[in-house]
Length: 360
Ligand SMILES: NC(=O)c1ccc[n+]([C@@H]2O[C@H](COP(=O)([O-])OP(=O)(O)OC[C@H]3O[C@@H](n4cnc5c(N)ncnc54)[C@H](O)[C@@H]3O)[C@@H](O)[C@H]2O)c1
Image 1 (cartoon, rainbow, N blue to C red):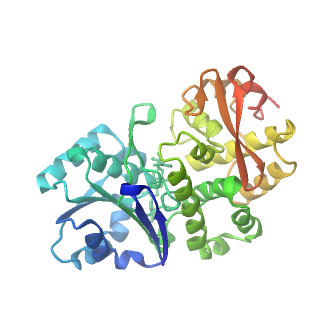
Image 2 (spheres, rainbow, N blue to C red; image 1 turned 30 degrees about the vertical axis):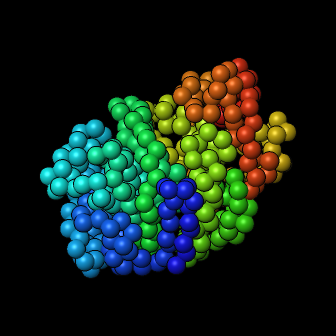
């Protein structure tokens, strides 16, 4: 079993990764939390496939009362209405300060369950058992928990570290191909920023079967890198911004489309990583050849690399970017594959860096 310790003083926790872990997490969670009661927040499709397995292992823990709550799947669970129903169910079950909430689903359920745990009774213990690839690559690392408001994703948010993350790559067997590829966009991002050997895994893979075989390794490499950034920069004010590679354009694409799913985040991220690197290369800010390597990998993963939205339209949606400071924006660029850096640019010169097919 891989064990990644995230060292955050009193908020330290471990990320455990092992095929088949779902069958034995119950007693481990009991020992870790010492809770008398746990509430598992899960979503329809995940619950149907895996709730019985989780329920069985939780029942193997002594003196633990368990309640499952099912919420709508995906982004639809991150609303005030769903959150309110969750608070009510938790209160009815009598959860107290020593108890725990388990988020069992994709990144959306994880975000919402983490937010509920962070805000209930001033904050109770939160365990994440991620079931989508995006979530297994570490959405819970760093402790960003949030829900959406109409038209604004993740607007209501907090930072609260999980008590533990339990990752079973076998749960990904039922993940649809498109979700699998969308998750891999996140792994390509981590590879571009910090791990050239991981990038080579993508360049050398012949098909999805190759990649699926190497999932535990891919997940572990990504989680390790995210954990180290989280330790160095708990509140995302410095080096952790490098994890935003590709996201300045990606968030603008999603915002322009009102988060209507025209592009899911993995697709928007793929376009963002390629476009920012292609232009940085033209400006001499990135080593030549990087954009072509990224293009090859993204196309192999059947992810898009172009958009028909103009740069001018995209830039209108960059005003909320967390990397804006005064009249400057810090762009995340690559020196080369595996090495990212922050490049401050005056906002009035941003148009030199953002060029889409419409403008080219
Ligand atoms: N906290 C953070 O720092 C952070 C970082 C990135 C993303 N996020 C959040 O994560 C969410 C995206 O996560 P996601 O990509 O996992 O999307 P998601 O949670 O919407 O899940 C995608 C789909 O996969 C399904 N699914 C999940 N596990 C499955 C399985 N094992 N088998 C079959 N189907 C399965 C879900 O039901 C859903 O339909 C967004 O809400 C985003 O805001 C948070």
